[in-house]
Length: 358
Image 1 (cartoon, rainbow, N blue to C red):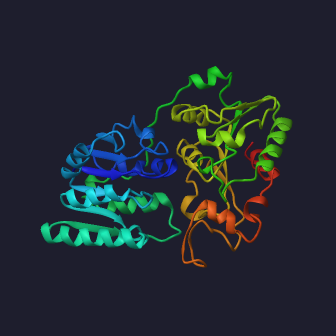
Image 2: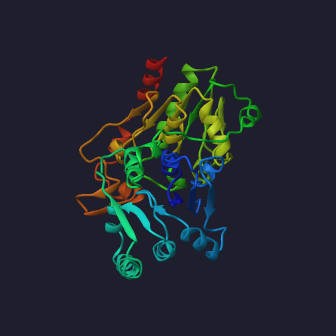
Image 3: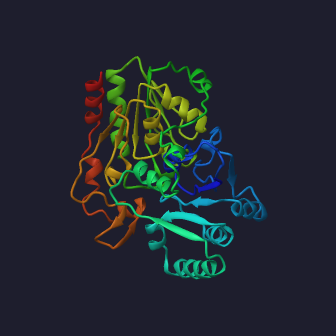
């Protein structure tokens, strides 16, 4: 089976697509997207992928040619392709597209009208064409939802392989270059959402207090700060302490994986850092608040979470009160409770978890 999977999602979401890549033994899988947050790059060493296509680096003819030969195209529920690419998928796909019911439902009016019209014409021209819509609950875990897309392929049991693997590359030189010993440092992610404000970010003052607590209680350990280049504007002239190695904006994906893999603990938000740590089966502590805990929670027994589960949570995503989707930035702006779900989590809570594990 020739299978194409669309990316167009966050880095953490792309990591969680890994189980879809192992569904068949023929390895005729193409991952296509725009690599906006590194969702393509992180899979570049995955031998189960026949090809990775970045639409920004390929011409339209090449993209269409690859679409035409696919037996099935999966648009995961976290994937949000641009409309021109979505039109190309429908027009040139051979037989079947699998997407989620909510993907169609959540389109804006203009986009929905265009897509529905193209679908009608497509089905008139190709009566064998089918678009299968996968349904799922809002509180279902992301890995379980991805499995439903696998089931939508209707493969025989002997063709299915739902084992979760994550093939990655790392750069151990990052440890040597910064004089870091394995299991002798903590990794902390002070920011998230690619440098933008977000309701899911723990207050900066809490991280400052946490760093002081870790320095006091683990004087022989270093503290490594990680984040992408967009976080640099937030961390400028901050966190200049002894024992602290500030690598925000200074690492690539291979560096990040190495840092997370060889740390003592990773302390992070509901983000790609959490999902990578979780898949690596590393000790990590994640801070949850306004996002959907049930959908995004980690799997590994080594992953610990801090979550207050207040009545107003989650407020990021679909909102029953506003009857529309609320993003992380807006959730922070409209919060009526002073960001209580995050502010009520204390640095001491994290320290206590570390002591309990030890």
